[in-house]
Image 1: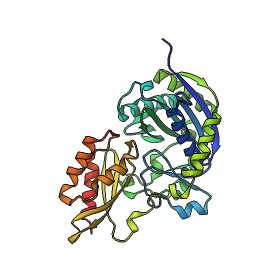
Image 2: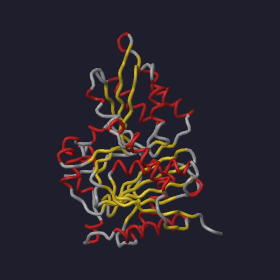
Image 3: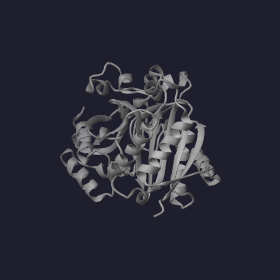
Image 4: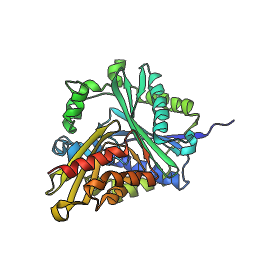
Length: 355
């Protein structure tokens, strides 16, 4: 039986916002039937990328970025903030759900991450998948991943750390102290490694791409077909960049809600990440929710579902929060990666109880 094909393209070095715009272009082109299932390799000019649901200034030291020539961008996938530059490699798989045998987001994550780990292992490092979405070597992260379904189209992305400058990385990012304490670490850099550190030499990126592509083909049952980005994709990417993803309005659409007057903030951290809820109350004695903004490094699919959850919580009294959240997830067509409805309810309840 002929294996399904996987087109492989490499768009080289671009800015972070340009790369994210190209991600969106590939999703749109795939949904329109303009491109086949694809594996995309790309690299970044220095950029701090926040996850789709994160508050920019809570995660990134924006002034440091400006002073050091680091762009700030926002991904279309969930997860936490990351720093990328020419020493990292990005990859993304855009394909039909059925091409990977279907399944929930957690099942797809495991399958793709195990394939990526197999690819890195071809280079001589003992890479392993670590739930919920990391690839590590001897307990230290060498790759982060994330993705979502949009209709019948899956986008799943990852990065590979080739070399690491901890001073820049952790100057750019606001690394929460609780993340360091949770793993009994003295410094965040001890949680991260690189191909250069593991191999003793700077990575040959062409070899890395070949190894990853080969492993994706072998482990996912796909036949590789190397090609080039189409003019349709490039045109869609330019439009996406100019109209949305390249704009400050998109990058800073969730900025620093906790500092606004009258906003109460609650937090819940579980296996699926951290959820923060920023709530305004109304009515006599502030007895119901006026509006809520949910942020964090969690993964939900589709990402726009978070907006619907926020809308569903408007007008809720504190005693009804859990019931509202449970009803929402019971009725919604949603995929969650380790995160649970109770985590969202806990964060909102924590915010409502704050003063």
